[in-house]
Image (cartoon, one colour):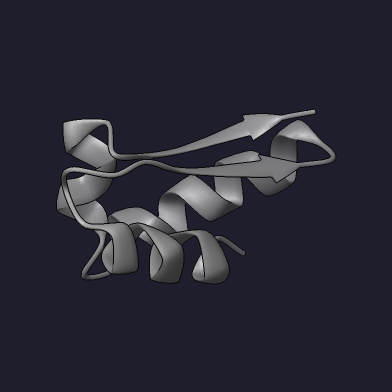
Amino acid sequence: TGYLTACFAMMVGPEGRAVGVEHIPELRDSSIDNIKRSAAASLLEQGSLSVHVG
């Protein structure tokens, strides 16, 4: 859902980097949508937080 990745991103802040890995594209898309509606949205926009399929 992106929750833990968002938490990690907030812990490391804009100077760090948090990367989430989802198993299927739909989960990645859902995670990104959830993060965009959270307090971590700015970190996603800055590139400090990213979610990938793998």
